[in-house]
Image (tube, rainbow, N blue to C red; front, side, top):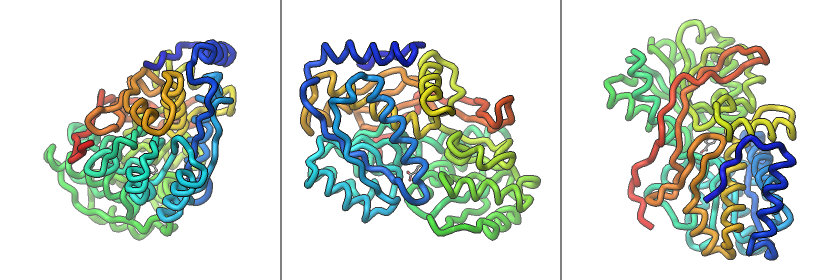
Length: 390
Ligand code: BEZ
């Protein structure tokens, strides 16, 4: 069981980790980690942020010296991600792979991970199938599944009186799954999807034609999934084309992530979304995390930082508990459970996906710029096994 981090200073946290180190049976062995993230392309900022969170967890543990990190870049391209996973597992002989931002990349490497029996801690990619019909005992996800983020918004929006929605998302696994989960839940509640479009992923620069078509359908709201560079472009164009004045915008919370909401500016104000972490969560664990992250990086952490951080904590605790080698590490990751910055976090034994709270937040103007006002909370959101058999 990972100890809850209370309101400790950076020094105290390092000390806590250092004393744990002296008790650790696994301290002498180096664990080789393949950190597989996009450092280029449309999700480069997300990869860099996950890296920062991951390294923070290792530093705090006082055991950073026990890990050897080999970094590889997926470039957000499935064939590149698969080739790099093969290189890390076969050539570098890593004990564990951590990372993966894109659902497309995760889908491409799932069979290799399972066949090579190399444990993978997923620190972002929400591909439902990786903890559903294509689950593997070697894959543990500490981030979220795509359905877990958007499904709760179907009922939540219907309960707020919204009846007709137009959906938009990028045309790849994450876009399709995020929109499908929302649409199913919204129609089950009694709502109607009046139109839907998927925009070419990594290629769409001009969202104007899609936004104009959405507005013409006269929905009560538009619901979207976009992240990274695409989220910034989409939100800015939603405002500059005047759609913001006519139709309110909802979506998965990556749309207005604290990582890049500053770049979106006033265009993001008033957008309502759902997510598993925002830095405005009130708890001793989150206060401590925000304080340490801010002291190191001079700004608030995003959901991507927390995902990297929780991936790091998962790894540290497994090693502290004595796990060594691929099989033992994979088994230890699946037993993780603690109160972290996002709230209670535990791994579902039926799927190896994280069980966690989902927060509905509105992006609002605050004293220090745009901030995340929490207006709803759905507790302990769990996925159905969806065909997962270990
Ligand atoms: C995905 O591809 O799974 C994903 C990418 C960015 C944010 C959220 C999900």
